[in-house]
Image (cartoon, rainbow, N blue to C red; front, side):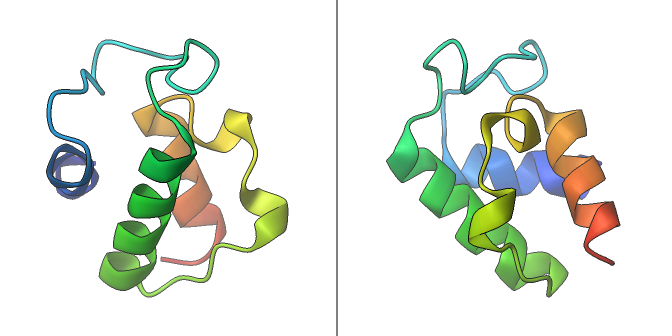
Length: 74
């Protein structure tokens, strides 16, 4: 989880990833942020995030993103 937090903070500096569980729903992350995050996660964890996975529920919190990574086999 610490590795993911580091990646997220590098991709989107200034976002409080640890203190929010509605990053997409509350408008903290926009589509450009999601593209940066997806790219960084795919590079770092060697997983393929499909278009079907690009739903707010998978990116609203750090734990949701971590669960997505684990589900995809990293």
